[in-house]
Length: 248
Image 1 (cartoon, rainbow, N blue to C red):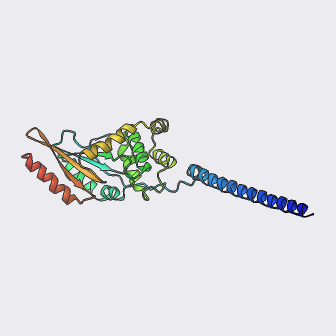
Image 2: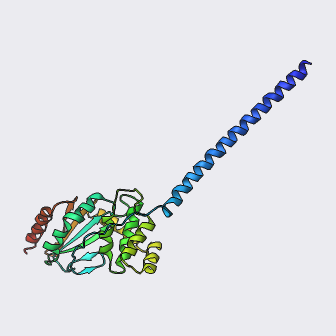
Image 3: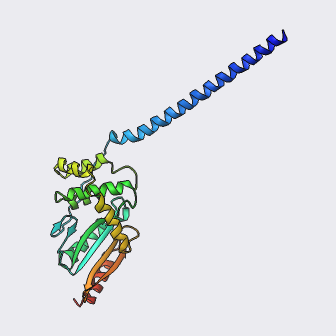
């Protein structure tokens, strides 16, 4: 009789353990399923989320535009800007100082100004926006895309510059979308974007925006570095010092 009771207890305990294991298994399956669903949502949502409005910036007058450069390529001073389309201070420079720089020094033939990306300095959207701008440059609208991207900047790594949003910006510029999409999807400017960062660091750039002034004195190339979204006064001082060094 006692053996029968003992066997019954063991069977009850085994059944309880089996049920506990099954509950644990179902709990983990549920957790994994929820996690997988959440990851899938994060991946899929950007493709269906509302794009939001697109701000159109005021046009900036740039002389003798060719791809990502503006001004006379034979000007005595070349300024290479190293920038990131996600960088708020880069936007500040574009919206405040750049027009004065263009008017006073680029349009007058003293400076040739070139925009360069700075690789993936802030994040993946930095690369995507640079790719979009360079691809627009294939259709002679680099600077239009440059201004449009900055005008719609909302923060760093916030998902604003998704592939869909950049495509919408390209459509706003009335680009040949087949050519643009082929360029963007093919990462045609991947190597140039990587080289931009290497060139910038070689010139002493550590953050954005930074500006490398290059000029020649007696056949020797010299450089000056301006870091940050400085006012036109800073650029004027450095440019005039370089011109004086050249005897101009």
